[in-house]
Length: 446
Image (cartoon, rainbow, N blue to C red; front, top):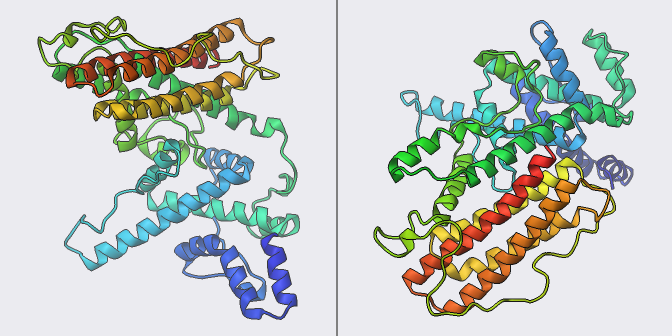
């Protein structure tokens, strides 16, 4: 049941207080944003549901383009953006209250420089939420005004939207009304940009994972590797996206660019550290003391536990079932499936870093399941031959990871510290092969 239907039924039943509360709940977010800008709240009882101040300053070409992109945003993305702006308003008011109570302090336990990471959100959305803190007061006000105008346009319908446009002297009566269904072409520019940046980000992650280790000390290696942290590109569908690729300057970037991730974003650094450590674990670094037998082993996966046979978990074909989709997958589907595989490989690495060999089977089963999902989106025919070859490599690597790792763990029983290091090295090396297959697919669909 829609909110309007609930309010209508409450009014017809004579529950005036319930009707009032339902209206307040329906417009809670926009009321909060309006109060932050104007100090006033709409009078819902009188039929006034929005208080939107007029824009300040001239309408530059960049702002016009940004508003057009905001208008073309899907409802889900607009709702996410509005919710993030709501949270940023709350953060700024809390910060202002803290500084008012402690005028001598510039920061403290009550001061939060940006919105904290929400584990329920994607990394790109978390990065965008944090980037909101870098908006100056006028820029943030302009963003709120545009969000309120777009929310009013979509909520009140064509007549009210046209009246509001005339009142604001915007002269955009020729613009399409909110309830017209957008065509595929309307969304194409944004979706193409999202797909391209997603592919670039996935390739950067996979390249970080698969880059060969240089023969230098761990300290120097780490410092050299950290210079690559800025190579990850990101995606965030934001109202103020870059108007042109050639634009420069921090102020203009904040007005026109997307919500790119701050360089200090801790979540992305943790992911990079995990991928880097995975590469080192697979080649014997950090897992073997100097001079030990394990330290001399290479990343070829040729090491094995002494005097032990390795049983297999299953027999038969050394690959997953053949793909069975009806048509080739879209780029965003391949990227989404690859992200899932990468995240589950990262969980395996976390278990390896903590020496939790008892968790390997569960992590490997999740990787196998993610690869199975990825393979299932490719058809048996009508697909790029290179893609099918990569799918075959990926499925074979996943089969090997699941079955041979299970054999190693079963043969070892309760392994000694030395055997655990050897097992970890082999398991991580086989996980590398899975990552290679996923990387090839992303490159093909870039």
